[in-house]
Length: 283
Image (tube, rainbow, N blue to C red):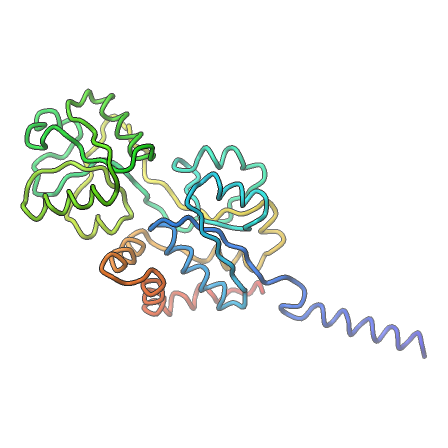
């Protein structure tokens, strides 16, 4: 009888550990960069995971180096990154300890842009029209990848315009002032950005290919994350946020909403899509 009793107890214990949520830790430690293109992706994916029963703890970073170090050490398990160019150095340095989980958006691009009422379409035309632009290209923070690429463009194209260092806020103010008065201006800018929606501008063509091509966003994780968390991996991989939606969310933030509210409103407007993402059978 004792043998039978022990066997029954063992069977009960096995059954309990097989119950959903009992066998695996359903807490996901998620990192994010505190930038306007990555924050919406993080917020949307967090919601989908939470609806699947996961607890999601988000840590925000402001520097790629710190974020990648935290991911490699396991302080966070997953985060969104552009591994092809923007954060390529950090990815290459750490990729033996990391894994790509899935693509989540595509189309990140940065370059020189002008308002659409300005009658030029290529970087090559800037010199012939330097005077109307006041002999300058209005830039953003020194040391950024966009400023580095624009500096390279100035050299490669032999531009006579000065690249003016400043800040994203100062560039935005200059762009608003110029467009309000319908005056020519050349700025460094990126997509996705609420500015691309707010201001009717276009990127100048780059025939020499100085600026990198449109890049993808990926969920990346600590090596082994997918194997150890198959349910979370499949849920994360189901999420895809078009670049236009990221831009629209940030436009709402620029108009006064909090990021949390803008993301919540986007989720509420896409309930059917969210439901399809959540309807996987891996858990």
